[in-house]
Length: 375
Image 1 (tube, helix red, strand yellow):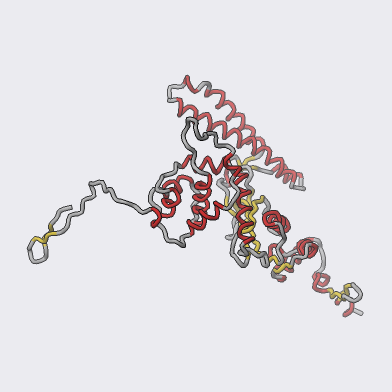
Image 2: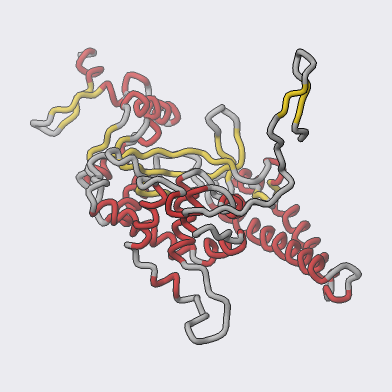
């Protein structure tokens, strides 16, 4: 940029030039990149209190022998925890943040972590990371931050990475599977291709993955058929070629789309998620008991109170939680509307709906108000 510009009166004013075509070498105090109370510091300290022995089992390089030093599991865990707290779930995006984001730079000591390292760590240690989540909950519980006095439970439909047009019946799935098998065989030896080995290997890997998805789609199709009672519905059953585990579910906007039902339990006092589950169920009311079981598994004790919406209010759930001595808080009116729909489908007259009966605790009997009025 020029160092002078013409002013309104015609004179040339001298300005300090901006030079972006240069390299700058400056000292950086890494410890001062983030504040003392920054969440990244708490995450780092918390990760240091956990049992990380399972993450070291796959590290082969040792002191005194040749080999590149491995990235510390504590660092990778801290990076992923911090990324999730910021809503980042992509390994590429997290690697990019390590180049300029102060908290990531502080965690890594100004080193950039390759996205392959981040992604491979998450995939290779999926089970261990699930156990780590339980350990984190245990630490929060021991510190009194999670009480389970009141747990909020709800479900949400998350759209799958598949379109409605990817659902096919059995004959089409088998046709696509046979075509995929033929393509894999036609590829032959990647070394004989005119393209590079890397491109040929990538093509073969893509075809193998496609064949694997189609094989899984056929398995899921059998599960879908088993869940249907009507024979015609079984014949019309379909499964997705790209996301076989997805199911078509009703969305909040009233439409339908391939989705998963994500069940989330949150401690009311701390606002911390204490359990997460993913199901293929289109409705929520059968997912409350599994949700309670996940909370018990993660924290070793059951919640004292579960707060839910009307989708979870049913006779079965009320009795099941009462047996576990858990208080269920939910809107009865929505539950009654659901019960009314069930009564209507069963052919029960409106005058004999549950609200037409009164309960006498002394005699442990119900009395029909309709019959009293007709005497």
